[in-house]
Image (cartoon, rainbow, N blue to C red; front, side, top):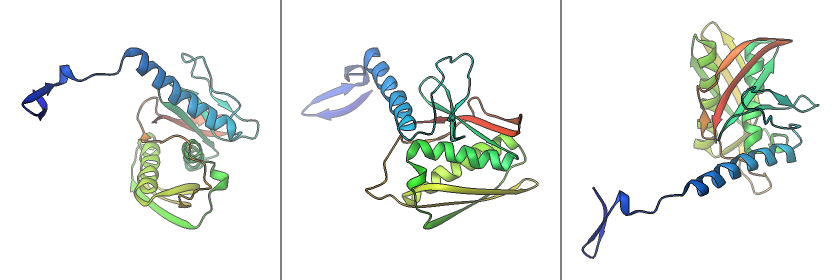
Length: 197
């Protein structure tokens, strides 16, 4: 199949140069290193586990955002007394990858509402709605609240339009169903999933 034609020549997919395995590996390592460096620089995590098969959770001594290792993407963890509180903590972990959430001024409010009976799917829906609103409106988000009545979820996020002084971290594309889990844990609830970066 011809992809482009110029001056009587056509190119097929086979003619186009593709990335080598080495360049793919370097790009993957660079993305992970950037996420790890951004999180460490913000002082929000002590380390990211290198034992992928154990999927250990690491968090900072201050109780900040927590992450677990996943091949090319990043696993986030939210904890709280209730599922809603764990979801809020998960949103903080996700957006802490994007910028220093402590530096985000709460000048613009974003409302998020949806229906979902499955608590695990609700976690991914919550995160993806926040990412979509953030990207569509050009906002950096830093504060979150969420309430539930049965299968109806109502949340709010506060942030501001991107400004030069806000440090940009990794570009989060969205939350996935990979390693999705919402369950009771010591001290309350734990919600986790992999986010596509």
